[in-house]
Image 1 (cartoon, helix red, strand yellow):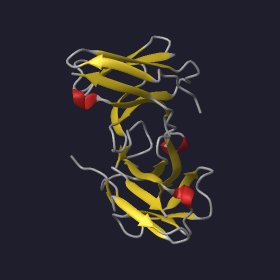
Image 2 (cartoon, chains in turn yellow, red; image 1 turned 120 degrees about the horizontal axis):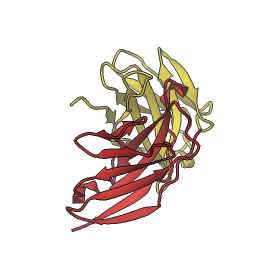
Image 3 (cartoon, helix red, strand yellow; image 1 turned 135 degrees about the horizontal axis):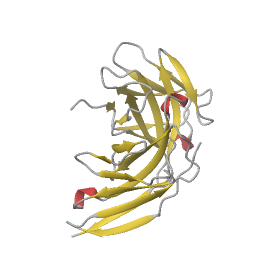
Length: 114
Length: 112
């Protein structure tokens, strides 16, 4: 069964540095998402992406965050200048279309900011 | 966003059925009821979804009340691998590009 893959599984970065988290969504999916989960807390929506542009974003997704689909297969989340509070699990998800289809999640990247 | 209410935790014995309840009294006519689960150290995993009729798949069954204000996820024979946090989420058909709003879910423990 096709799956969403994320790399790296664990990223350790110094505060203030830029970080790029990578995702390969399922190939025939059209909608892409990033979520994050701070340790012990709820999964929180960050951003949705469709047709090469952001569809929706949450309050968390400020100017320090950006997303890109640089080619036909990758979907990336960039944090420009990381803060300690960015430490979390980041999950990528994709969905085939906007109807009642489920989202498929990757296993996440654990981001640790030192 | 329409909200759901779930118990914080539940316990089950292995090989026994589990009924996980969810209340969604403010559901609108076009909201689908989705269930996801999150196993330890993994991303959320889709389990099942429905609109009005009960649904079955290889993982579980979903029983939806006639007034749609509540639903129950049924695991027919719990295994140790089913220990996870289960989320009941309302997904507006065709709306909001489908971003999911997760609550705290129900933490299911399965005893051998």
